[in-house]
Amino acid sequence: MSNINYNDCSNILNYSIDIQQKYAYKFAEGSEDLYNLLLTLWNKNIYTLGCCSGHKDNDNAYFSYMLTNEEGRILASYIISLINEYSDLDLKCYILGPHPKTGYLDFSFRFPKRKTKLIITKLLNFLDNIDYSLGNNLELFCAFEILLSKKFKYFTIEIDGIDNKTITVVDDNMDSSKHKYILNEVSSTRLVSETKIK
Image 1: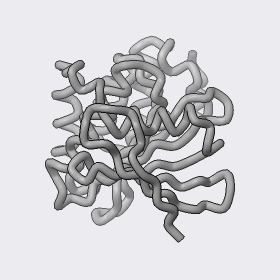
Image 2: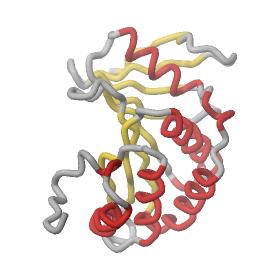
Image 3: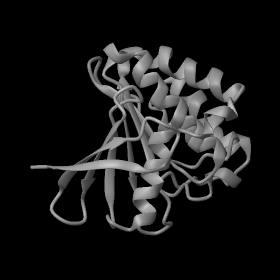
Image 4: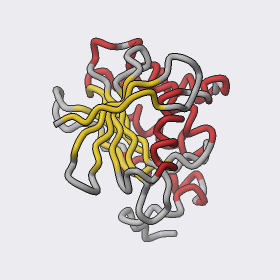
């Protein structure tokens, strides 16, 4: 594979480690932390969709991936827990979907570029020893329930944090109206109440 088409990485999970390293180097934009994260995600069969190291010091970095396997869902649960642990850092994550071609949900995580090493080190340590007990995350299950209800054909969910027990849904298919859901305090996938935000 001498001529690499960086615009097409649809088979990235099937490539050899040598080829994956070339893709990771290109996509990481000079960030060694992001480079290592990409390779680790691919090793866990987590299909990434995009990333950015942040071009200015005060920019945000981000990465996104498709929620296709248990490891990806558990990583999303862990990331949600980081939002509460580092509430002063303005961390944000979003669930988007369903993807028009695959039907899967996409997960995106945004964090300040200046905290890249801190955040990605935490993620790499977690991925090195995945805690599968985090699989029963309330916000994620509620997101899946909204998808299965087919109330929204395409939506964006902003996770406000576990402690707040709220998620905000933006219905991108209709009029970009916002709906705030208050989640049940118990371990349940039931949505307790909905408020449409003007």
